[in-house]
Image 1 (cartoon, rainbow, N blue to C red):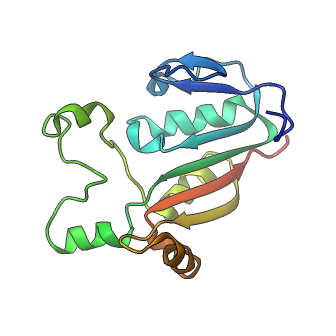
Image 2 (cartoon, rainbow, N blue to C red; image 1 turned 90 degrees about the vertical axis):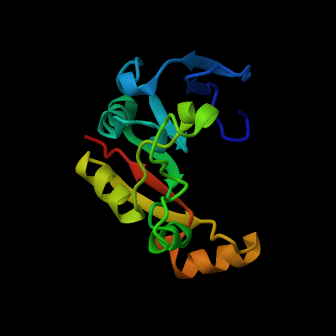
Length: 170
């Protein structure tokens, strides 16, 4: 915590896995039961694709962020080249399974919604955020070093999307 200059770090998950931080256990599909304007920064790494109520979650991020606060959101990219290839072959993209039951133990964590980078940007703008930065990462089946280069040339078809958004000061 000293490295990032904060005295307090909190986490939220549906399962508490013994993290050393203050950890809240609840389902984000029901909202975030935290006071308004409580956080300077929110990090949601590969959360959106597991929620049915994405609009509620984005509204809740806006509500619990302090004015001038940031959120960094990472999620799978529906428009990745490997997903496009699946569709061209008439197959279901692995990032968006057709059934929760069909995938057995994976079903609890199955992706519910997967968006393109452009749609994700549009969603956060719609809910009042300013987009600060947009990054793409990963390019199947390329090795990491080559994938980084390709993502600089074509972030819209990367495997993952990361956006940094800001809640403007009122």
